[in-house]
Image (cartoon, rainbow over all chains, first blue to last red):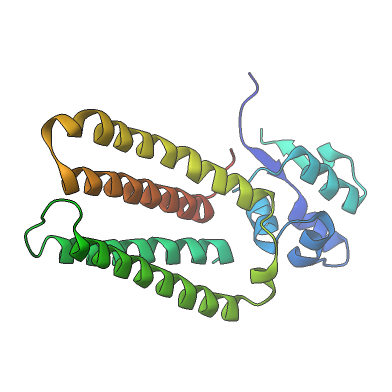
Length: 70
Length: 141
């Protein structure tokens, strides 16, 4: 079984996209600002739908946003 | 602190305060059999106290939380709530089995009622504790 923590680039991608706030990103994918903060901190793994929505907001493929931490 | 963590703290506090008051008054004198109108009135007063704490507390938290308080629970809120209920279910089941299967052979009346109440209180405390812990330390399913 593949195991290990999942890393993400959400914080970097927000800043590369006009310093988008956590609240803005949350509004666009239908979650609260706290949930975005928890995702960025690795304290919550989003659902597949939310992960795809985040990737779509940044115009990136899913694996460019979320990766297994090596 | 997220709005739902605050309301969970409030729920936990209201349960502890109201039921501590109830059990303190209930066991301050001798407890007679059923029906016991003194205990029923004390229980009703404890529930009223719990409702007042929850009502006033929720209004205060809402006033300070602004937009966040009006937002519907998102997928993380729902996942954490499910986790809390799942853990509390086992506590409730253990309490109910003990109360309904074992206690009728050894105890009577209000002791059984209070054991059932205690299993409800413990399960609520576990539910709230799991939710608070999940918000504070994170939870990845």
